[in-house]
Image (tube, rainbow, N blue to C red; front, top):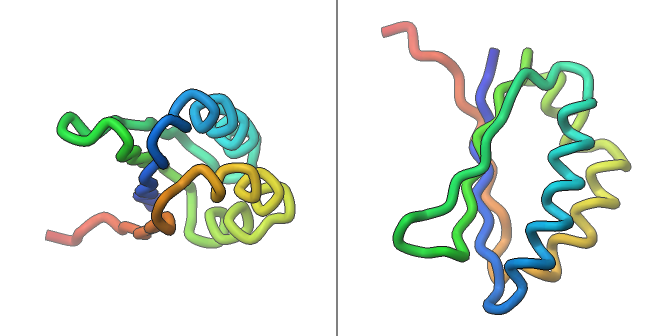
Length: 96
């Protein structure tokens, strides 16, 4: 299993619109093959900073979703609401 850390920063005053569209992205991701679980967190010191931590069965499953036309279409609605590019980090369990 891998974890994917996604960080997004929402432009001022677009939080509500972002939340509605971000829910659709999550609903579609949940249905994607290999999705295990996920949660979205708010930065306690920056309410426009969103962090999503998603668990995927494998990096291949994540990559399939990440490069899917479905995700690209959904992200086309989210990207204009962000004031920075999203940051994605793929994490593996440490052997230590």
